[in-house]
Image 1: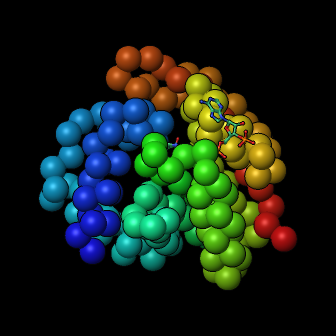
Image 2: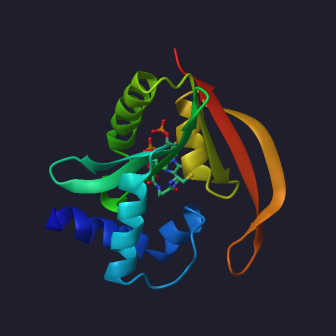
Length: 152
Ligand SMILES: CC(C)(COP(=O)(O)OP(=O)(O)OC[C@H]1O[C@@H](n2cnc3c(N)ncnc32)[C@H](O)[C@@H]1OP(=O)(O)O)[C@@H](O)C(=O)NCCC(=O)NCCS
């Protein structure tokens, strides 16, 4: 849908989101956004959904679905954060992951992304590793936390 594409293109081109998601900081042309969406939606070991809360508001994804585990990603537009949308999106994501045979969700998050870390802790993810100075964001080397949660 056109409105989904506009939202995804806006998120992809948001500088602070680029930093938080550890993707290259640059301007992504429409064709590059389309290629990213195609990669995510055609990945045989992945799944991708637009979060709809009275319109498109973000996305959630699973990647590297294998051996009972999957890596998750979540990103919401700033104007719907702090409203429980992320919690509901994660509940649905966990249900989908379970249906695809996953018993564990894993993720990576920048140590400076305090809001996301608080969000994951609230959902009972635990930290399993901390890699110092793992990611260069164009200005600084950043520590990265590895978190995971067993699904029931
Ligand atoms: C991560 C994300 C999905 C969380 O969704 P959210 O709606 O912001 O989540 P919440 O409102 O539940 O906030 C999570 C917790 O962070 C804390 N928090 C809120 N605002 C905060 C702030 N400015 N700084 C630090 N912590 C904050 C609170 O403890 C809150 O828990 P509470 O509701 O029990 O008080 C969302 O912020 C987002 O899309 N961020 C941009 C992309 C991103 O960073 N994705 C994760 C990459 S690994």
